[in-house]
Length: 520
Image (cartoon, rainbow, N blue to C red; front, top):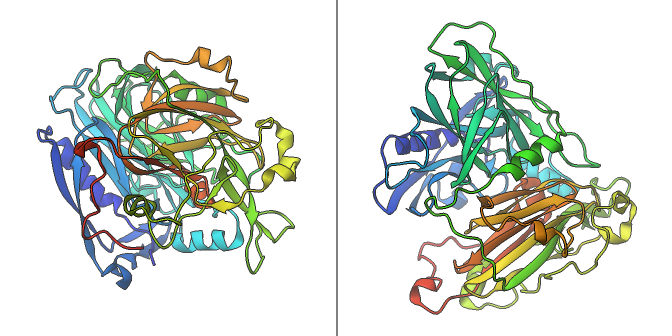
């Protein structure tokens, strides 16, 4: 199986090519060649055998047609096991008009934050699942595939960004890390956020960005400091309570003015590992740019109002009952759940196929709209209440009518320990109309919703020990996975699927599967 793959290098070619000209057509077709690449990092060299796996027919290509609807920075990545640890890249969609809703930057650069392990990531996941616990920490973080000066054997390979004094640049920042949210700073510089998740924002000036896995942030950086060298750096934001500490290291790149020689770049002062106020300030300060391309008003007439608890719990270990995730109880494994349902992926047929062909027995459309047991969700004492911790494995989904307006309140819990969970919905953008700490108050908290210009995202970090409310219109038929973008939690079961029924017209009806659809 896969050794670590440097497919992000292939993405670089695609991203930089996309930046070289303005898109003019509605449909683009690209062929992605996934192939064997030898990579050297942290004094280790790895070569991937996964692309030659006979079960995949050897080396293979995937042709994708991309509908140009949003503008800005997205990303593509693997979604099987832990392969997305390095199988990812930038997906840049330029404005069809050729004009941004802000001054055109001098140049644009993708800044992709990632993680690196000195071992086979498939073995890493298999070991964690066998033992019923989370995976081991990564060995490094990376900026554009490079760990940076602070790691062994990496100094000469540090990513360097050469700039000219007095210019404005766009940095398209992507968090492609597997299991960590990240703070990002550039020494002595502020920047202006102009878009997140390929949706324009009101300009927001800051000296730090916080990105959960799967999130993107576009910023304008003006090179107005004394010419020299400045570190750009990223380190984790870690909110989990009652959990082992993460890889608490820092990845660096270097911003170099005017190609001047340098000796010691200036280092930024990064937030503390658990600096929740800084993380929350960044997330809650963003608003959408009303009237910008692809902006949509907030739905106000609601058809579905859901309150979904998200968090960790326990499930049966299974034979041979040798799990180590729950101390001194080998019969239990750590799991994760939504409304006390820990998701089990089907193995014989996909949910989308089962939905399209009306095959019974693959899933049940009975995920509760409200928590089956109401309790004090954010009480720290919950971690001592074993009655709340157990969640059975199941394949329970939520089914909604086409064009229904849906509101979901994600409520963090403290059953194992509170944590910021970045919840990601495939197939949709959504409005983040509110967020806060503590238990969601259905009477008073909606009074504080932003229904005018809330930020539009596809991934939202639910505040640690708190809640976040999203709204969207279910106008994209099919089966759309909703999951925590900490991949360790995805594999533990913090997942569900929103099945959107067909609409009344051919254009609002799910088309049949392609003839080359891979089978389970």
